[in-house]
Length: 100
Length: 187
Image 1 (cartoon, each protein chain N blue to C red):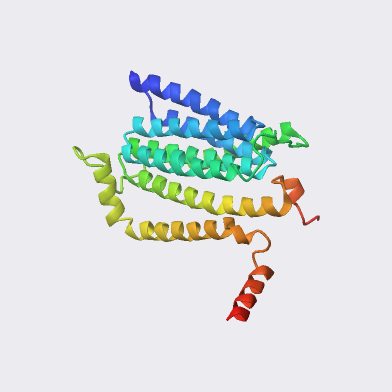
Image 2: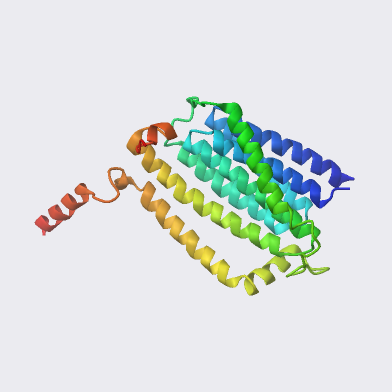
């Protein structure tokens, strides 16, 4: 039988995949994909906890996470388009203007 | 029985697809595998009895967010492979794994205690959508409205950032000043 731990383990694996992506990627668009992966992993954990504790709070949080992710994508893609028009590249190493 | 089969199938497929998203050099492959993984995550929600959440996931993520990404791809060169230089890939994997482990332990520690009580318990014999609606519009009304305002702000920001005449500078737009001056002259 599938328990809460199974879902939490799957969610943790997907979250660490997203975290590795955030650390590894140099392209801004791919970085956005990795953050989407992390947000989805957290949503799985919330839905699973909500199911096994018979509580609706987890689903509410998942809804608000989805709303935040949608607005993040809208603003972030607008910024990416402005950056691409300005620099012609989305590579983080090219965009680094403050050389310490 | 079906639940077990579906759970393992969905988890293996989701992990594989998200690995493709993270590892692929091609933007199109990454985006399509991300969309497919999100559909499978909606499958997880349906298994867990969160029907409304699954439908919202399908509409918002697979519909709106992925459509937004594919529209944004028109601005970028999607066919070219992305070249990324990584100084030390194994160190990144080690760091990512360790920090993910720490995060998971941190967040999973309170869950295994029995201190959690259901704040808004689900009702027997009531559909998931009705239950969610009642809680959302009574207990979570203020966050709901704030989220609506946030989405409006995000929409305006997206329009202004991706708008046509905004490609030179966001703060000082000389051509707009010229336009205003010529309009004044015409009057």
